[in-house]
Length: 259
Image 1 (cartoon, rainbow, N blue to C red):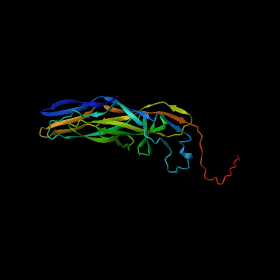
Image 2: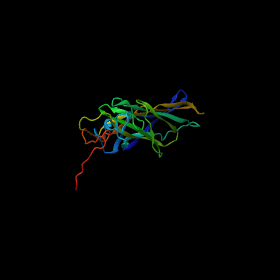
Image 3: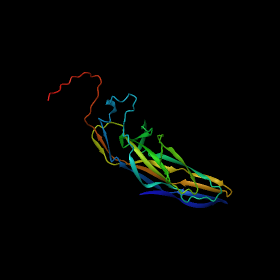
Image 4: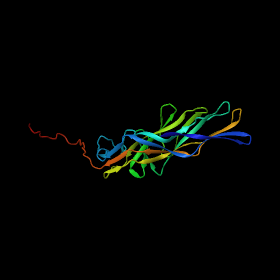
């Protein structure tokens, strides 16, 4: 079940100056579970670009699963700004940087890019396999906006522009692709994995002595939103029948039996 993180309100003073603070507390996990496809097959014959003469020499040598893996999300999937109010006139607009922190203990950035120009990360526990992914952001009833991942480590996802009194929630989605980085040497089956991708974290924002009331406002996230991908089953097949096109052979006689 998908839920939204909600902030705690505190009303304090520094001397005679009033400070209104909204704090998101606690770390939670958003789980993106693969729905389609249910399984992915990589084979030495099909995914060996070296033996395929239709590939030019400058093509990067790895196999790509070209379709996005569709997912459904559960757990805490975003932030709610419902109930954020101000006593100033006019109210300030909140500028909230949103960052992603890669789980480098699980994933290792490579220099390779997917067809969508997303970074391909090697899965440390299964170095023959890579993953690329995108995080999507949805505000209220608006369409999902997919955020590009062009950096290899931690990076700014976007900056949220939120007005006080804006009741729309911000929620996240995940889509991913798997990549074969090394040809299989034996038949292997990988069961469904729970792959930790990293953390989404809202950066602190504040403004001092705003408006005629001179009230200060703070928004902070003292927890994090962990992002986890639940993959389909993966099969590595070492041997399959394969055909190799060789253009050097010409006019090969073929004897046909009469019927």
